[in-house]
Amino acid sequence: MVETKLDVSLDLAYRLLHPRNTVLVTCAGSNGKPNIITLAWSMPVSRDPPIVAISIAPKRYSHKLIEETKEFVINIPTISILRQTFYCGKTSGRDVDKFKESGLTPAPAKKVKVPIIRECVAHLECKLLNQFEIGDHTLFVGEVIAAYANNGIFDKVFDVAKAKLVYHMGGNKFVTLQDEIMEV
Ligand SMILES: Cc1cc2nc3c(=O)[nH]c(=O)nc-3n(C[C@H](O)[C@H](O)[C@H](O)COP(=O)(O)O)c2cc1C
Image 1: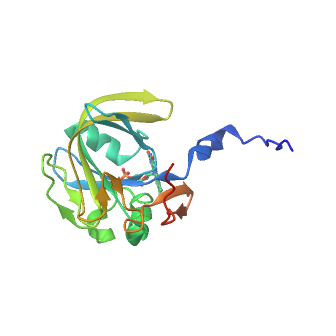
Image 2 (image 1 turned 90 degrees about the vertical axis):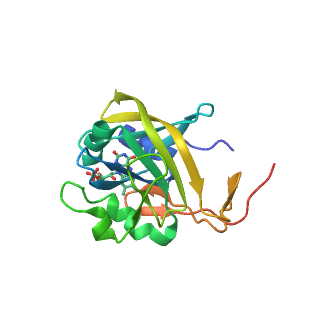
């Protein structure tokens, strides 16, 4: 039997690429005050050297901060901080101190001035290499200069039974992965 294919409106086409691993990016302006932005649009783009890309709309406060200091950290949350993850994607650092209001804890990074988020389970410290305006977003491309994960949850791959990563479906809907891993 041939499946019927129903059109998806083009403004929702991106959601066919969800659910997406959701991250909390920390950044800071030249005044040093840190901020957190929730992002579903991040990806690795080079293995050696290790380079990643994140897509941020110019109207976000974090966009200005990353342009100022050219550093950011990608922090990986789990569902234990889902509420805080959503909060950081619904409020702006222009109006609130997200560390203070969410209860997430800043901790020193290893190689950049921007803090990491202690409650996250893994961290990629990045130096901005380049940025590209693409449609209504800016693609920030960063070299990973330090990467680390909590003891016991990552051995070449995540132990997804222990690290319940956050995947964004769209709107306020999230999913996480089943414990079982299929090996091929
Ligand atoms: C789950 C989730 C994923 C998001 N993904 C992105 C994204 O990939 N790019 C983006 O520009 N904004 C994204 N947002 C929206 C920003 O996180 C949101 O506008 C935030 O309030 C901006 O904060 P800021 O003004 O402090 O930078 C997302 C929001 C949520 C809740």
